[in-house]
Length: 119
Image (cartoon, rainbow, N blue to C red; front, side):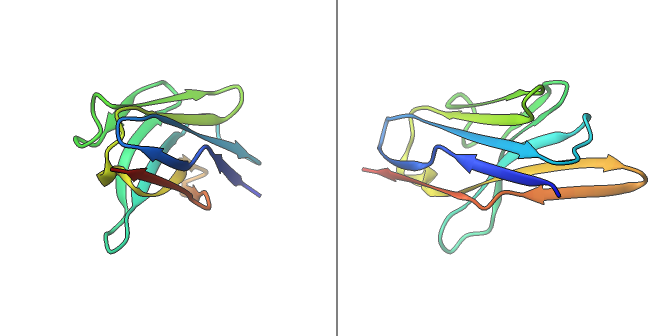
């Protein structure tokens, strides 16, 4: 019933920029946290950034100052502006939605979008 649709991934040279988008649809509780995670080959999935419906944000140390997460609550859409990209940013980026409703946690993931940064 809940679906996350991602877009914006691609190939970019080091120092370049990309903007990822994730639109959520379905029965979504208005108070929630949306975020981006990434997984590089041979590594575990890691948090990149999260943002609450009240615009409180958390960033991984590796992306602070370079990435900016934002959201449009009316559209249930979260964005990730990625600047000054580095080869180590290469990974599959996944959108995440989490909320607590009716005494239970609900969590949903997008299908992932590939980001490749060349040297």
